[in-house]
Length: 230
Ligand code: CA
Image 1 (cartoon, helix red, strand yellow):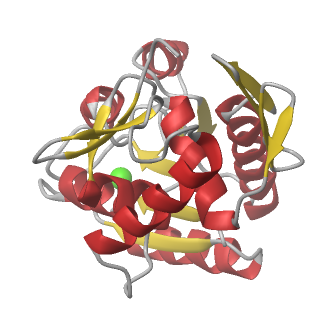
Image 2 (cartoon, protein in one colour):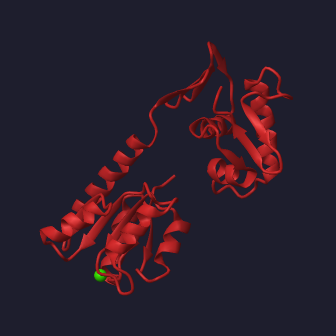
Image 3 (cartoon, protein in one colour):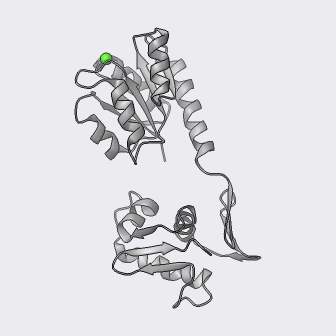
């Protein structure tokens, strides 16, 4: 899947130039003009990286960055400031309020691409450690294998993704819709029933008594939870 990059920039020519270069390098991009609706548009787009101009018509780029860092959806998304202002105060302020990097206009497309690539790579490396131990479960993300005690559990790709999601958030209850969003993402041809089917299959693999689950329990009238104290 191509990485999605949001370009929050009101100078149309510059935005188009950045978009052209990003797409040439295989990224998906979306230009947002930096109006009052930009924050909502960003939360809907859930980009992998945000290029953020400081001087915007209706909002201040620094203020927008503050909101991004407080957003449940975007808090961890790298923000790279684009600005004509180059003095040290702005640079420091931008980084203090949660920006990850700073590019002063004019910059070359090549330099921008290099920074974008570096930040996306760092994000990937920070995102998930390659393996995790949760109770009796051991998850190897690189090899996509799961062990329960000494026994390897055989899972389909979707079952693996679902179990990985539960193991990453033990003790937290998820509705079927939340699980669809987290595990199936953009796929359109799935319904909340799909979740039940996969949970049942998963239980058959990991539970001694699938009808009386110990790890993956039902939260009545809501959804499912992976028990914390396993
Ligand atoms: Ca501007």
